[in-house]
Image 1 (cartoon, rainbow, N blue to C red):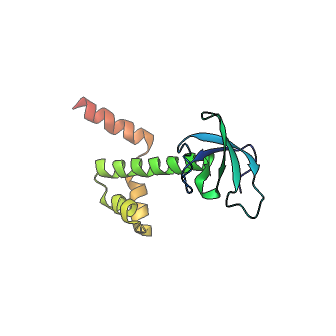
Image 2 (image 1 turned 180 degrees about the horizontal axis):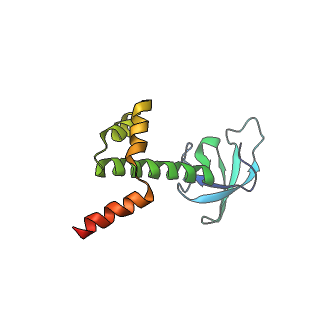
Image 3 (image 1 turned 30 degrees about the vertical axis):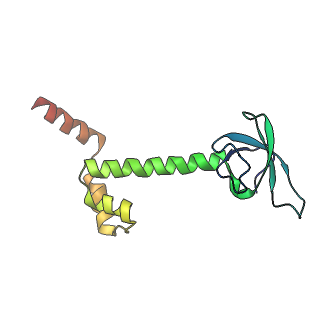
Length: 127
């Protein structure tokens, strides 16, 4: 359950009441009427209005930010796996295949220490 005053984002419009999807707002009240389908009253500053919304129509902003960060990290790992031609990591990310203990050990051995990495970069730069 969301807390009063929490910053939320409109993610859906279940009852087609022309909610501004994607806009943020603040939870200002719970609708405790058992005969009503709505759960919350939300204040949308950009629209300068209050809306009655269901729990499925709104999501906490911090939850959406966490999901976006996880999605971005996953995409960055896929790009890394493609650029380094790491097939095992790519299949793990795409298919959700579990990595064996031996595979994780070899992947950790493949990663270089900072000094070794700088040494290899300097060698390649010299050539």
